[in-house]
Image (cartoon, rainbow, N blue to C red; front, side, top):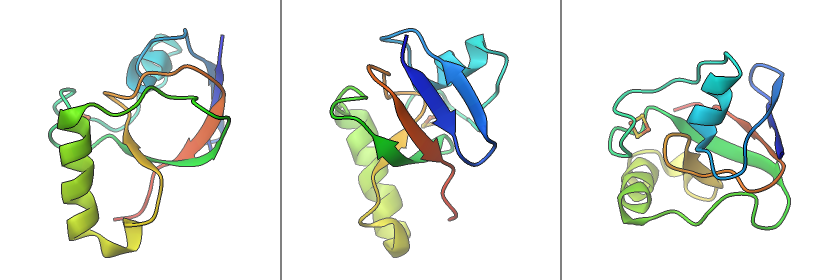
Length: 101
Ligand code: FES
């Protein structure tokens, strides 16, 4: 199973391949910030810090639209590797943090 480290809290969990990042942490008793759980509010925003190639599935349209809106409103995040924990599915090992907005 892929191992994922939350650098903001130093929590490391094993996530079942194909689970969303949010679900993977919740199954390990760790709650990540969230709102709609549908890819539209952006509350579950994470920034990828270190990753292997293809550790997460590609963002689908709703996630990409929300990420684009967040980057427009937060120019300091424009060049960061951002994802939504409720939509991104885990495939390999990586670490992330909760970005400042
Ligand atoms: S919880 Fe709303 S976008 Fe993820």
